[in-house]
Amino acid sequence: MSIQETDRFSREGSRLSPGEEEDRSVMEDAAARPVDEEGEEETPAGQPERDTGVRLVIPFFAVMAVLTVAAFLLPLRPTQSQMEKRNLAQFPEFSWESVTDGAYFDAITLWFSDTFPGRESWITLSQRISGFHGSSEISFSGDLNTEQIPQEQIRAAEETAPATDPGEETLPDRQTEAAASATEETIAEETIAEETEWGGVDAANREDTDIAGQAGVIQIGDSAFNAIGFSQMCSDKYAGALNKLAKNVADSGVQVVSAPAPTAVGIMIEPEFLEQLKCANQDDTIGYMHDQMDDGIVKVDTYDALVSHNDEYIYFRTDHHWTARGAYYAYVGICEALGYEPVPLEDCEEWDQGEFKGSLCHKAPQPWKLKADTLIAYVPQMNIELKVRSMNYEGTVRPLIQDMTQRKPNAKYSAFLFGDNAMVEVTNYDLPDGPTCVVIKDSFGNCLVPFLAQNYYKVYALDYRKFHDTSLQGFLKKFPVDQVIFTPYVIATQSQDGAKMFQNLCR
Image (cartoon, rainbow, N blue to C red; front, side):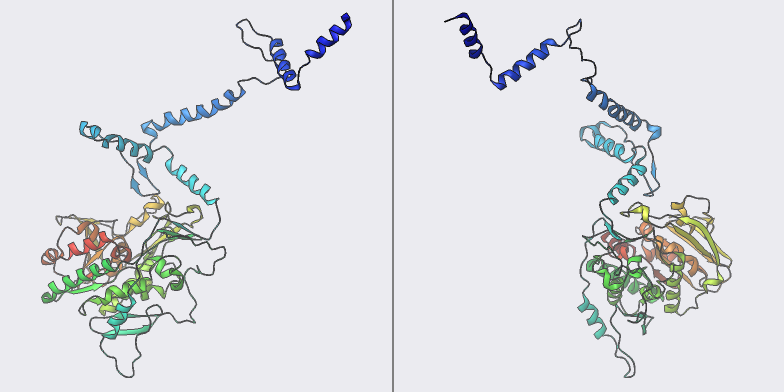
């Protein structure tokens, strides 16, 4: 074999496969790269640095570090929530007992999450981002459970009512007509005829309506509403508490009056649409409770008093309360049930206290869509004095309606009755021979009492949420009155806590 043939055979025998040639090429490139004095590879000119990814994440971790430091700076941590109207969690006090059982560290975790700097801005941002998930005129937040109102018991109560004269019409269905009950007679009166145009929120005819699930807060366009369910047990307890009180004070001649305050969802939204919103019909709820009460109790049809005015500004859009105008119509209903002449609204001085943002601002699913409210008060033009009393009956004179025009928008409902107090005494010196009453109320009653004060010499207003540990009978022995008027908002009558408070108060 010649030398040329040997070379050719050697080259053919050592020929690499494609994969082997690629691996060899990579190894040759790596061997050709220059290295620095420390043995590290140098990046050829024109190629990106290998640590580019590291440099990109440095700003992220720097921001996180700044936020972490800011989170632990006590001066930056909020102590109150203007949106939620509450004091935020406080840093816990140290004790060995709380450390050993874990409560101390749980409290630190709560404090840390509840008081994070800029929490309300972050909450608002989160809500806005959530709003991008879909667009709906009707949206929900929270959960609600409700029972069916026992219509058969309502019908049974109506069937056992005293027979009417042959010429009188029978009581129509509660959803279209209502009855205002006076002391011993029932007055049937038409409230909403089929041909009457609905004055409230036209929820059923809104476009792009998306109804899903149950809700604690309902938002329809620029207005928010508290949802409400029905509890037969709680309704029976409310009625039973008033029955017991009426029986105990019967010999003293004191009248017991039930005038529960309806909420906006029952007045402003069509009854036929409530079932889709998972809400109870408040006309039926109030009717059921009143049907369980003894005949001697005065039953005020507050639903009828308000629903006929639902084309007016009678409920706030950002708050769960009625407006002062709404409270006025409830006052008219109470006066008519008791045989008093209500003072015309135009006889009061209207006081516009500016923009108001209420309790539903932070609870609504899309709060940025809510339309801000205006708080308008109506000041009686009589010589009326408000005295805020403590539990030991000591008193301090305060304005019946205070000036809140310069206060924050979310604090302005405190204009009425100087806010929520366990007990206030209102005296109308223009009616020294007038009757006296005690109003069992919550915050709904704050803007109702100034109207009632125009027909009474004295009005004692007790907040059942703060006064329930005291026997109402003991109070009546110290402060004799002609009537006891219950004005809780309907949601309270459907809660176990509210039912327990009414029972304790009337024990």
